[in-house]
Image 1 (cartoon, rainbow, N blue to C red):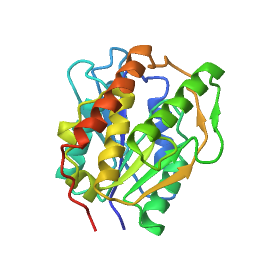
Image 2: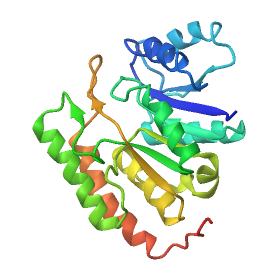
Image 3: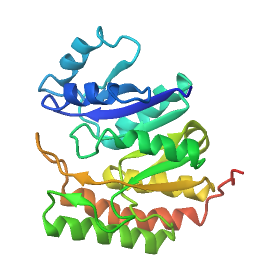
Length: 245
């Protein structure tokens, strides 16, 4: 049996966190969860602490001082996972925009199709987003088109944040040197995985915008990704990526 860890960064997710934990643990596939909480003022961490006695070997929490952002949260989670020898490391949001049932489909893509990275893709079969205003749908979709054009990656959903990595990917790519934040972090992680020649599979999912809590999207994040992707591509011309067979 594989050792699976789901990384879930949280900042003010008290409405969602217990429901999400129970949902993941109700799945047929065995997953453990690491909640990475950025010192949420709303008491998210206390809710998780209260659930740990119920799931002592499956639920874990990493508390970080202050709000340091999604990319930094995932980096901390990657280190935590690698130190503890997990086989598959998943990334997902706490707000139910990602359907927890799709964790099993990402896992199957890795196990059955030998993917080293499985991506929950909104754009592999049309545009599968629910509750998004049209402007945001178009912005996200054309951002993905732009990233594909600049990077030449054959990935439809380049900014997706719902993913499963085999541990060998995280052991190979130099993730501590990832410069981009927010959406850019997701792009750069995929770019490095692709440059090293790992097998990437996109699994179609439906993304449903959050029902509870506050969206964390902003124009600044978007602009950073726009210019950051161009700089990332230029840097790659001067970087050697060892191909993984």
